[in-house]
Image (cartoon, rainbow, N blue to C red; front, top):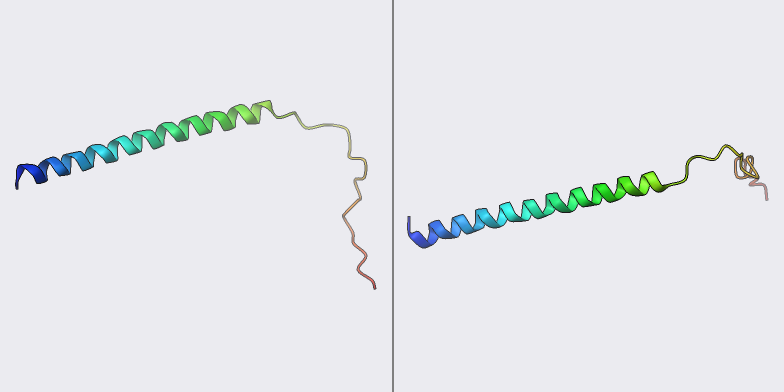
Length: 62
């Protein structure tokens, strides 16, 4: 095997490792952002909706 082909294989392996590392960091940042957004959502309201029956039945007679 020539030196240039060995170096090319090592560079390709290094590029893949770096890309996976960047992807992992991006996914961790995205997950942390989602968790933060979920925690900032208002809690479920105990007040019932103004029209709890609205949209449950549709009259399709012509």
